[in-house]
Amino acid sequence: MTDQIIARARTNTRVNVRAGAAKLSAPIRETLASGTEIFITATVAGDKVAGNDAWYACRGNVFVWSGACEDYRDEPAPPADDVDDAERPSRLELGEVMQPDFETLDDVFHKVRGYRPNGLEGLIVHFDAARTQPSSDRTTAGVMRYGAEQGYHYGGISRSGRIFLPQGFSWEGWGYHAGKSECPATGRKGVSKYYVGFELNNPGLLYPAVQTGVFCPWFNARRDDKGRVELDEDGRCTRLDENGEWYRDYEVRLCEGGNITKGWYLPYSAEQFDALTGICIWLSRQFPDTFSLERVFGHDEVSPGRKSDPGGAMGTPTELMTMQQFRDHLGQLAQ
Image (cartoon, rainbow, N blue to C red; front, side):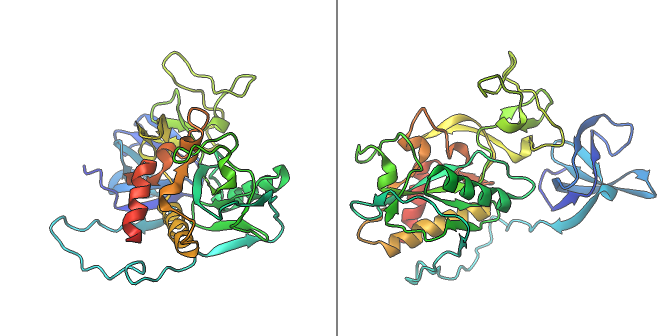
């Protein structure tokens, strides 16, 4: 059976995932909470439940009864390798750059510490290490409110691609977001003064759980009294809540290299990546005398050893990028 994703659906109740066969007698691989998105490789006939024998096959040779799912959506098939697609000129190629669709949170005010000494020079990519479920938009707005409470200054991007800014946001005014940091290009410390920060909603480093194929964020893993995730001798964590936030093996990736701290990551969504890319390109056109796409850094590049964001989250679900690769990508778009 092929592993190519042909469709997606969402569970509408708690449902068991069966391993090896579309049968009620097959072993239970895991139990999905209501509202969980599943990625479907085929629809097969299996045991009848309430008169319905249609089951969804998923990667890893597992099966979910279709009667427990809704919102079935076909996944577009990838184009054949030998087909040339006629591509229209991009707005960048035409010299046009659309302003991103910024959404101002009227009740959120971030603290400005002063004006950037040389104007806006670049951007720092973060992840917020926060929940993505049940609503990434709501979490991202909450992270923006937290920034107001703590006296920080940054923008936010949810997994839907929505871009949030605080009220009265000034690109040339600076505030705290990167903490103890040093620019790898200039050697200057305290990079918040020179570079704007964007927090992308993402749970951060993930931990393989005792359950096979399950990966947990820090907030759904057992932790010690200092807040550190507890791991067994095989490097596995204990999941706190099976109905809480966790991910399956085909949703995450293990990676290292470049700026990336070795570990498991949930990739940024394609919508987040596009939003971040659009912001960087737009800023390079808005501030052509000061903003450099070569000064788009990861938090892990300006605070190495202390921070791991964006790490292996950078890129899209199908393409991992180091920060240098992202800078190269931006440079190609801007040509």
